[in-house]
Image (cartoon, rainbow, N blue to C red; front, side, top):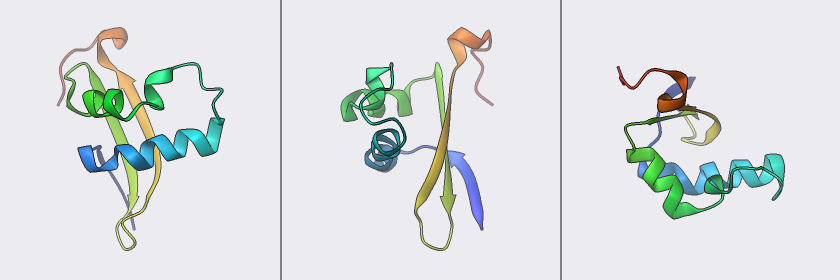
Length: 77
């Protein structure tokens, strides 16, 4: 089963790996390659970072991010 949940600090390595596998080094937003910046995004109230995780294998298969300050909504939940 696939579960969509908010990203956690332990997920940032896999998130970075997904960006590298998908875009190489060509993704225009460098923060998705920097582990410290990804960690900040996990805890930032203006960013919603979701991951899709296989609940059996615990492997993160994909992700989605929303910059709430840019979307006009700063409320999380």
